[in-house]
Image (cartoon, rainbow, N blue to C red; front, side, top):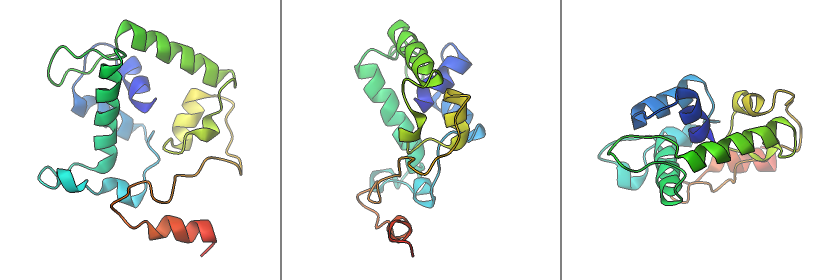
Length: 146
């Protein structure tokens, strides 16, 4: 959703860097400290995990023909991707789908999707073992109230 929103707003084809920077500048990703660490396989590039997640979303979307995959480092929604995004955005904005379920989305992004959004106690929480290779003690402590 974050990537589709960015690409729809940017329109046309953009680079990975442009798409990720757009998401970052708007503070759409609900960043936690562990998101800035690289995956073990990314130690050579030092790319933050959240940026790698965005790249994986692009790959998965291209495999589903929701994004174009015709050029290296060219990120753009396909016609079907635009149609799906527009449909989902409408469903979130009308409340048919609930933004409270997006645990990687910041409140800013949730408000972008649904102008009537207000934080509530039953917001989805990020799984405490979101990244399997990191012990996520901070999230665990929050869950048990420490």
